[in-house]
Image (tube, rainbow, N blue to C red; front, side, top):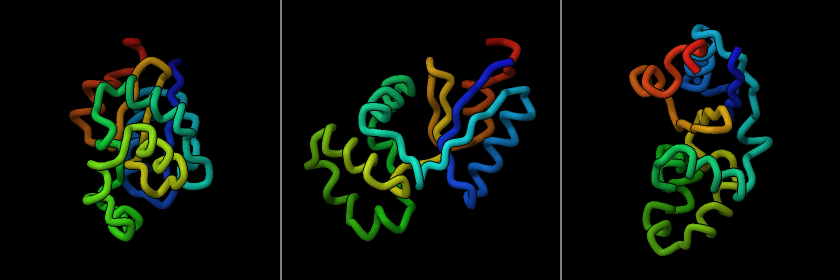
Length: 124
């Protein structure tokens, strides 16, 4: 059985859907509460690398904190390290769920993307 780690927010319906989807495919899921235990900037750097996505895709752009901090205007001027430190400082800024098996990582949830990335546990 394949194990995946999911950084999630328990009250987030998208996170719940993602976890159900993974369990339905036979994954053993380790849940990490992203608000109480956000990944460190170093962990985030690794997750971004494993995802193949741009760092900005890891920001929860629809979240209140993102809007309050006016990050849409501020991010372009920030260095990668400043952005990583900012994400690590507040789990509500991080787009969720983040799913990783140690080799790959995905951010957010939609079925097509999950089917492509995580397919069935038995295949990996």
